[in-house]
Amino acid sequence: MICIKNGWVHDAVHEEPYIADILADKGKITAIGQNLIVPQDCEIIDATDKNVYPGFVEAHCHIGLDGSGIGFEGDDCNEMTDILTPQLRAIDGINPMDPTFREAALAGITTVCTGPGSANVLGGTFTAIKTVGKRVDKMIVKKEVAMKCAFGENPKRCYKDKNNYSRMSTASKLREMLLKAREYDRKVLAAGSDESKLPAYDMKLEALRPVLHGELPLKAHAHEANDIFTALRIAQEFNVKITLEHVTEGHLIVDELKDEPVPMAVGPSLTHASKFELRNKTFETPGILANAGCQVSIITDSPVIPQQYLPLCAGLAIKSGMKEWDALKAITINAARHIGIEDRVGSLEIGKDADILVMEGSCFEVSAQPEIVIIDGKVVA
Image (cartoon, rainbow, N blue to C red; front, top):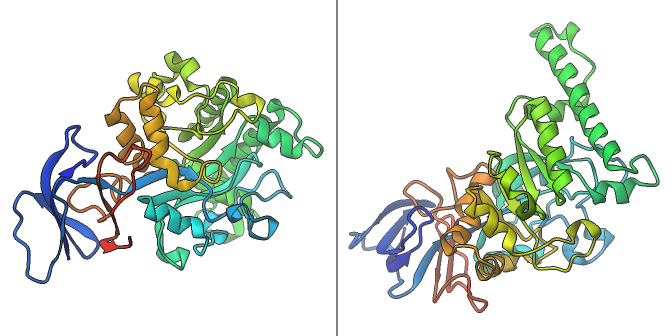
């Protein structure tokens, strides 16, 4: 049992911070209020004059899969032998011993959604995990969060000498797989309990059935406006859920996106425009979208930006016009909503995981560093 006393609580629920105690037991927040009475054996953390935040949440990254930039031996981010790999699962490639997990935890990033890169039209499923642990199975918050798909330059570039030279081809391949999966699903449902009527098992099509049933959204890599609209068009055609990832040109089409009830994860913005589709990259994007009423998360796309700089990216968005309240939500509760785990993390509320940060000053300052990081009720830093 841990009690954080007298801190300025930024709970990601109320816009204004307030002074309160937070009590956690068995990994969950059990009470929030002033002058809480706690048992004698409770560990007390004095947070007087300090800020208390929820653990930060990254809605889109590749941590544990990219090999920390070391090379092929540790790089499991993209399966480059097949442009359509929906059957792949991030959990089978994540390396919890990757030192970037520790760096993330020390910086207050307590939960990440990590998964395949954007080389393939369909890349496989993302997973949501905590940033501490030795065995990925024990780090999981949600085993399968979304099905990765990609539009734009990356599938073209990676497969231009094989079977995918244009954006039209990328879209057609995704449609073809969804059509095949829909027919496969129809046959499975029609067979019922009669195994003799089941279609031949297809691992790729089986992996897409949760997408068709609305149980798993497409996680659509899309930078350019045209790619964003193609992603939305296909999702509407098949009546499937979708989240937009990167949304680099979102500020240019905000008049259209404000009417789309689709979660948007913006970034990585702290890099050069290293390819043509990034030419309109700006830190103004998340603020413009949030001001229009869109649900916005801010992402590092780690390793593009090192995972520990997630709150810094939010601070730079504030510098470029984003409201501080929107920036906090963009790396806490909105990120949790984006990946469907807001019942567990993303805010300081009774019943949620005790992922809590204590720090001097604002979390958005370039020098910000948590003094105390608590994950699942345990002090990890």
